[in-house]
Amino acid sequence: MDGALTRFRFMAYVVGVGLLLLVAAMFAKYVGDSETMMRVVGPVHGFLYAVYLVLTVDLALKARWSIKGTALVLLAGTIPFVSFYAERRVVEGVRTGKAL
Image (cartoon, rainbow, N blue to C red; front, side):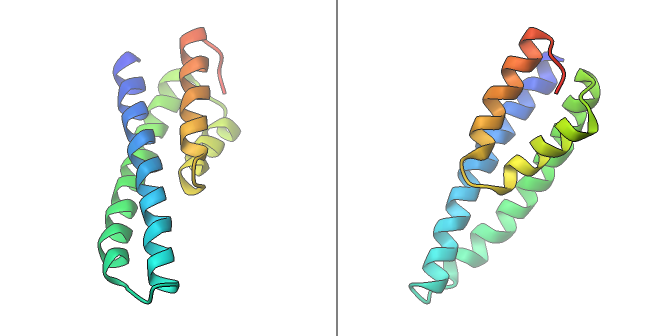
């Protein structure tokens, strides 16, 4: 389970940073009228979020999370800064043996 947790932690940070970049790209697109950043960051974030989903489900199956807990962690990658919070909670829960 340590490998699954490590992969999840890495992707949670990557997706969190990617989401912040996506927000900056959206801001540049709608306020600065520049779509260049959005054309690059949007698809990259989408791909990385898909990888995050797969790795989260892998960890959820190994840690025997509830469907509700799994869904909440999956959604954490869609709200800025929440993936960082969810990562901390998940690590605490997995290390102490608490299921989500």
